[in-house]
Image (tube, rainbow, N blue to C red):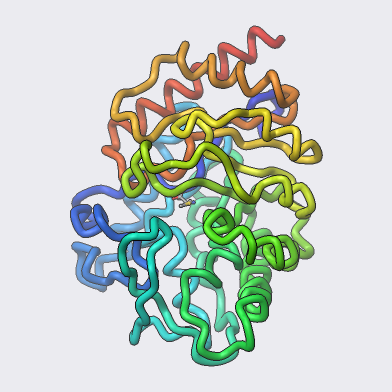
Length: 345
Ligand code: MET
């Protein structure tokens, strides 16, 4: 892990090359079930192509100066669907329709038809490949149990809490394998806690803690208001409806989108026991921010969080952006972090 303060990282995803995926298919839908048609390569060449694209993503992050890199989530159609649909008890082939997180469209989601169990490792190869291909600290992301319980239609468990706890057990088994394979940081993506804060209050913390049981490497829980490409700036709320509660999780860091919604960082006082992965890149802005703009956002964060507790990051995943924009933004962020590091001393 980097020894300096203000280590930079990403939320997870990096743009997938057009030669690998049909990006137009992704532009309007965040897949909950599998989207096999998205891949341009025939099955016999797909893994090699995904490996190569993953190396491109890792090298871009390194070249931009990112301290804690990921595999760019290159092998996934969405951040959550590959893991969720790989589990026993989940039927992804006969989807049910639910109202999307943005509230205005119907999305196909997998059905829960039996006891949820992990059949075997899902992201283990991704983690091993990342470990073999970078000297930097390596982070891997997993969909959180609360979010997965909301992205499926429960037709088996007595309630969604029971489903979330079964999912948490599966996430935990996977996380333990990823830790063994050399993950330096493990992140759970839980953006849905803000959609249903009442339900989140009942069981999200319990489910997250179950998913992280026995994990000894640093852990992160990521929240956001949705990809900028899917939820434009004007539709973003001014604050989180479920945030202070996360101070009760066993996670070491909470990751929040803050640049695009111009979040009042006063909310960070509720997370005094955590490190904060702070979104300092506005992914709805097609322009690459100047180093000064990003440095100012980091300095603003330092008014509320001590330098040893702040981890600069983009607001969310960069999956939907042009690659040159993603790279430019990451570079501006890393240069800004270096600048503020010198100021803080
Ligand atoms: N790790 C995911 C990503 O980087 C987070 C998605 S939250 C909507 O894309």
